[in-house]
Length: 289
Image (cartoon, rainbow, N blue to C red; front, top):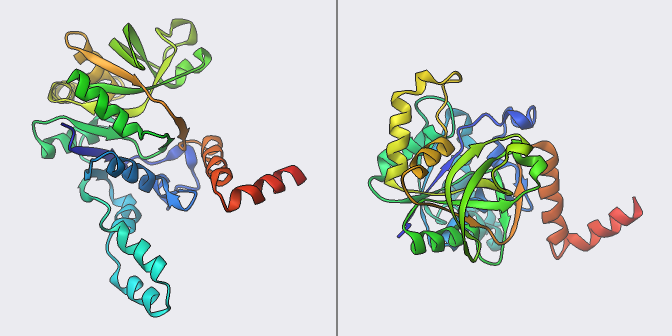
């Protein structure tokens, strides 16, 4: 079963500059938690607490957020703020987190391959840390269930407007198996709307198997042949799907992409409106504006 997960955070966050020049995009707040904490809590709530974060020297704040801080805890308790001290202490015990520094060609396949060499010969989950899902059943648990039923790679999918196809990897759907589960035969990366093979987008959640890792290894050996010199996870999944079963799971829930300024503001606004304390006041403010 799926016991481990990988979260790549080594990207530069260029779409959110200058905000992310010093502050990692994964540390931007959604409600009272940074984005990456939402991701880790989603994994833990889904029964996955062995997590590898593939990082870079620019992302020290991510490690600091989850590191023990005895001095802060003691100061809070001495001030009678035990609830805050408990919250700080919990962060360092949420999960078993290992950090790796990214090495290799650019592209989102490289951090996955870095982590796979440590994880070994078993399937694992990959989640990006700029997505927030609000769902009765966590996205990660939905992906775990799909893998348990198929024993094959699984992609998280969401319905999309066809005119948005050029923003996503779009799966080629071979069969609808019911319950939101689709058998797919490949992926088309950022197609033109008129060439989109389906009305679904792959949106940053994957169960990766050793066969997909082997495709990443092969891509690394020939990465210099690509014009941009980058290694992509979607390419490896596409190649694997040519001769092996691959599935998509349409996620039941609401997806907030925080990777661009407008989408980040939408995610923050939605989280604030959903807050039982702040939501009513913000709605009142919106009506008065």
